[in-house]
Length: 448
Image 1: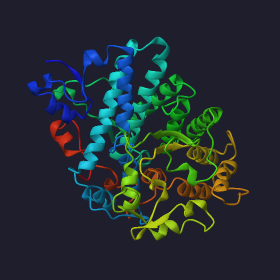
Image 2 (image 1 turned 180 degrees about the horizontal axis):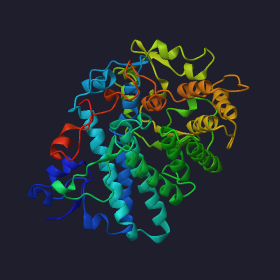
Image 3 (image 1 turned 45 degrees about the horizontal axis):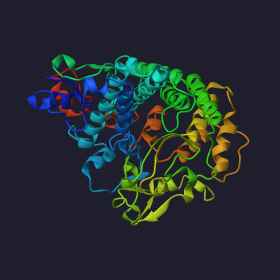
Image 4 (image 1 turned 90 degrees about the vertical axis):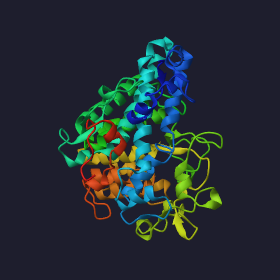
C-alpha cells in the first residue's frame, strides 16, 4: 500500500488507512514520494499548511469565535440557530460537538502538514531552507498554542506539571495503528514545545516575508505565550522585538481605528492575517457576526449593553458598532471577503505596556506611552500616568471581539458567566471519537 500525505486527525487517519481504497489517490492528497520530492512540491505542501490554518475551524473563525463565546460574560449573546456554538456560549458542551471536533481535527491536520514539511527540509533549495523551516515551525507552534489554550486547563491554574495538555506529535503521521496514539503531555510540556517551535522560528524567519510568517510575527506570538504564562519579562522582550522588527519593516498603526478592519489587503497594522477573497480563504467571523445585508447570516452574535457601556461616548471604537437585524453588531466583522486579522501591532504595544508595568521596567517605551498610542488613535485624550487597571481596560476595548476574551480572562483569573477561570466547563472536551479510537491513550478532560 502506498503512503500518502493525508494530514488529518488520528481518528480520521485510522478510518482512511484501513481499506484498499487508500490506493486510489484521495482528492486533495498527494503521494508522499511526489509531494516531498522537490523544492517546488515541498513549498506547495507548506502553502497547504497556511490554507489549513485559515480554515473555518481554525483562524478563519472558530479559534476566535470560541474564545469570545466562552468569555461572553453577559457582554455578547449567541442568537444563531446552530446548536454547537450555542453549547459553547452556554458552557454546556457535548463531547460530540462537531464544531469542537473539527477544530481539534483540523488543528492536528495543520500540525501534520507542518511535520511533513519539516521532514523534507533537505529537499528545499539551500537558500530557502531557513525560511521554509521557520514558517513550518511557526505554524506548528501557533496551532499547539491555540489548542492548548482551549483544550487544557489554563497555565494560571497551576499544577502545570500534572494537568493534562496536548498529545505532542513531531513526526509525520501517514499510517495509523494503536501505537500511533500519543498520550497527552502536561500543560508545561506543551508550552515548552510551543516556545521551542516559536523561538527557533523567530531565529530562522526573514525580517519581512510579505503576508507569511516573519520574525516579528513569531516574536509577537511568543509575547502572547509568555503573557499567558505570566512570564512578564519574556513577554515584554518578545513584544519589544516584534514592535522593533515590525516598525523597521514599515508597519504602523492605521490612521483611524476603523481602517484596521474590513480590508481586502493587509493594512500597515496587520502583522499576521488570513488572506480572504471571493475566490479563496474563509472569513466566517463575518458570516456569524454580520447580517444578511452584508452577506452574513441572520446576526448570530449580538453585542449587549454591558459591553457598550465600557466605552466613553467620544471613543472611536464605540462608533464602529452598528445596529442591524434588531441588535448591535461588531463592525470589525461587517463586510464579506475581507482579511481576518490574527495579530495587530496595537496588541504588541499593549502587551509591552502590561509586561513593562508588571515588571517595573520601561523597555522600548513606558507603559503610558504605549497605552496612549491606541488611546490617541481612538480619539481619546492622553493619560499622564497609568495603573494596571488602565492598561487592562484599554486592552479590552482595543482588542474586543478578536478572539482574546477567554484567554485574557483565564490568565487574569476572572470569572465568565459565573464560572471561575479554571472551571472544567471553560475547557473544551477532547472529541469523544478521539478518546474512543485511542482506547484509553488519550484521556478526556475533567467534567466530561
